[in-house]
Image (tube, rainbow, N blue to C red; front, side, top):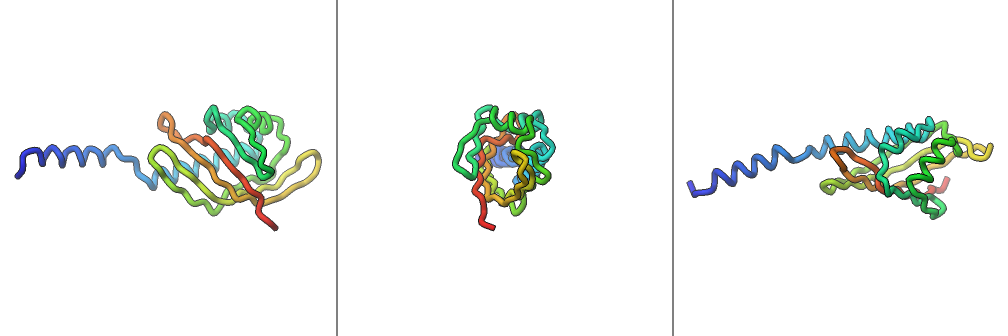
Length: 145
């Protein structure tokens, strides 16, 4: 056996032991997205705030960019209010401590007293901080009916 080979095997095995499980990351990300959707639905700004980075931005379907504080304020005021806020058809792509999720968000609710409903293609950018996935940026485009 070559000198140093056992060390190389040990380092490789140790690296595998510390590698995160991609399937587990996908489950955690989809669970985190579901928690944020529920926070929008029930007006839970505290939970939403825990899931967003401090510099979070949302580019909405009209091209307007809002920050974390604006989104938390909207959810706390429940304007708009949501009866349904669900993500589906998600595709998760992992890049170490970053992830991109694409999918469709279906919403139903009221804004300014008027009812609305819609489907939006979205792209979410997640980062892993202190062992938890947090949402750094989101973009949504309204889908044609």
